[in-house]
Length: 87
Image (cartoon, rainbow, N blue to C red; front, side, top):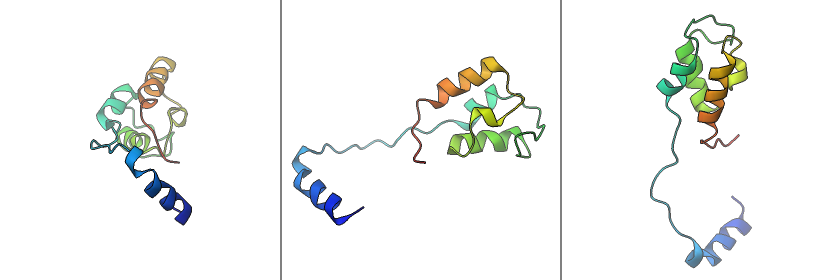
């Protein structure tokens, strides 16, 4: 954060409403339910559980799983769209 951003935030402090709840995070098991669970390693990860964890972290996307059926791929994209990742 730059000095200008800090100064700007300080000047607007009366307009800022604090947020007390954390940002929602994707559930690894929810992601895993949509995966083929074949542990085929085509995605580059040793298991579907590892792949699900990496998707939850934002390090992988649905297209990284070649074995994922189109219907579940769409459901997974929809599920993940509710989460924001700082890339």
